[in-house]
Length: 426
Ligand SMILES: Cc1cc2nc3c(=O)[nH]c(=O)nc-3n(C[C@H](O)[C@H](O)[C@H](O)COP(=O)(O)OP(=O)(O)OC[C@H]3O[C@@H](n4cnc5c(N)ncnc54)[C@H](O)[C@@H]3O)c2cc1C
Image (cartoon, rainbow, N blue to C red):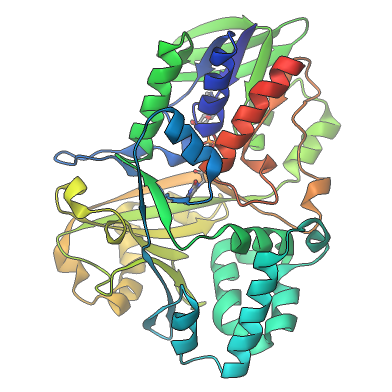
């Protein structure tokens, strides 16, 4: 079959590799100049490895991602980096039973209740009944209001903003269930890994076209795709087409979709992401924290991630790399702010963690993605968009179909491989 795929993120690339291996003619159309989608990276002069525009790692139970790395003979680095929380202007390690027992801001009873609830979620295999409840309601009741207000509510609000109270317990269950203390990272970074995947697809006969933006798709007996590459307008026909872009973008390029279906996709909510990357001469979190969750509702950031407290700084010309991450509604005015403006806004908060960091700055960059995190309300399984679309021979596999697991490259790869099977069977 002659199959088109829109998007060279991990869903599109994983589907393409599976399809070429089944003997199909595959063309991937990607508007950017590099593969990787939301996990795309960049490389500064003197750096041996690429770095993601938005922080990324795998868990050690991300079997689809690790399996793909294995198939490509791609080395994966596994380490146990430190995870901490920021509470009342101090950092506290918060990634093991003993570190939680040492945390001075919860009473012993609160710690027992919290441990019991997290343990129940970790060992419970059934997520479906949980989607009837909201995370906030259950955690506040089961762990106690004070524990919820100290640890969990700030994290939910800083991540989901006005949607925080709506987030399904099934989503929280998945976060707890999947978390591993050891984390994994592809050698060279996600960009280099995606480039290797692209090379493999090409080696096995597939095509991956960069700088190619799909403008319109329509479907009758075959699927017709209008696209633009380097200001040249072209049209191509495919027997089947897989769309991997977020639903809002799918609506823009497929005006033929029936209005009822359009409404369903429009009702899905999502948040964008802004990451300010600081390149420093010295370590930012001197206690070696890699991941800092923020438990302070006044914080301007959702999380701080010091990548070089996980991966060796030698790969980045001995620079210390820190992400200041924030999730926001895509219409939020922060999306219009420059790196300088954002740094000025974050500065008082960053100084609480390291008062001298500013004099160690080599450079800084900001990266923004308008669609980064689906909002998962109660009963999401009822509104999750299906793989088959109303357009004949057009299928959808995107970030908003990952459920109950939190979206990630592992699930992009898993769903991509499943999409290849479904397309062949269709
Ligand atoms: C802040 C942040 C942190 C994250 N952390 C992690 C993590 O630690 N671990 C992890 O595994 N995952 C993480 N993720 C999630 C992960 O990046 C995504 O789940 C995954 O990359 C989604 O892949 P995808 O292929 O489904 O979609 P995308 O990556 O969005 O790919 C869609 C592709 O379609 C292209 N496209 C869009 N419109 C068009 C068009 N009209 N024509 C042609 N091409 C088009 C886009 O350029 C893009 O390349 C994180 C994401 C963010 C934003």
